[in-house]
Figure 1 (cartoon, helix red, strand yellow):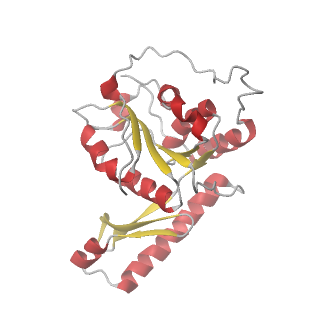
Figure 2: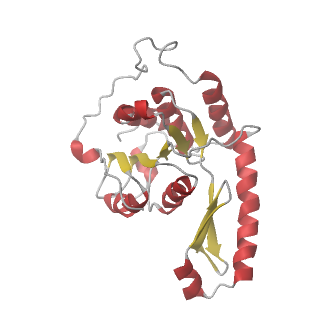
Length: 247
């Protein structure tokens, strides 16, 4: 198993994202499990940390099938093809959207407490999770980041199957993934400790990031963050850097 826990995974990812430090990025973790990973990246890159809260709009009679998604800042993404094929009416869509907007706002308030959402307009947004299985939620998160104005969207995950990364190329400008196993059953199999992240832990990490965000001059005179050595060999086939795509 390559990762001890999410903290270890985040620190290893940070090594491969160091080239983005000068880009003044914003690090966005998918709650809940992506936030501990994102916290380590944000600390290493001297970057602000936030959550990216998204909600899928499921077809009323088939909730697992997404007919769209919403994000903060009144971002709304609708799949017209799914609407047409399923026959969902505008009224039904509006009802689902209203319900999911209430839940999205509740979760955003829960995680941030009284802090406003970070503005990503014109910025490099590093979207982080603790792993990718199908990539559907991550796809929505990247689209939301783009709709919120991010100029450059970077996928950063410890592990994901190659086919999921391929599907995400259309919504990302760059991808950094440490492990891309051909045989993939579950994210948890790549961690020794995959204990569920609590809401309280997310809140505490965001608060801590707010209060202790280091600066190159004061915290680290050399300009480099104190990243621990990793025993993981660096292989080109485990790190994917994609050129900008037309999205």
